[in-house]
Image 1: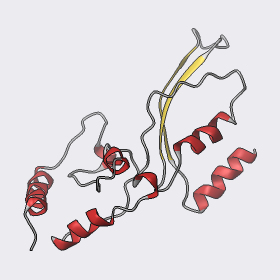
Image 2: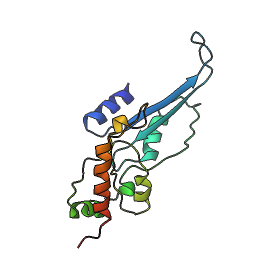
Image 3: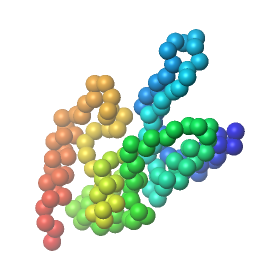
Image 4: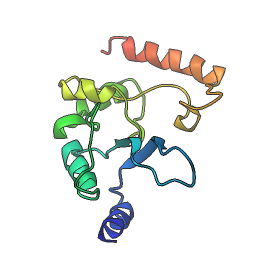
Length: 156
């Protein structure tokens, strides 16, 4: 009950991570209690979030005999508490306006962790990504080509 209340409070404060359960697996029949269950999940923390603290929070909710296998732990953007002001300035110098932070994980966080200024910029909508019949409108692809060209040009 305390964990649920803590999650509600974090959501109200805008500090709620994005959590996705990719698959659940376990049991042999619907009328037999499963001997074990497996859950594959992912979370995208807000900027400044800490993966280790989030994992500790989750593990504290599970029984002591729960086995946790962390296969990958990518940092949230921007990584290591940095701000990617240099990347934002690069956009603005070319007449582009930065949007809101994305609420999904991308490899950009690995660049950020390596002290390479990183932004997330591409066509499409996340609601259409990684799903059946994923698609991007041709007009958005044409637009992003022009934007990428502007970004690649030297700025005086």
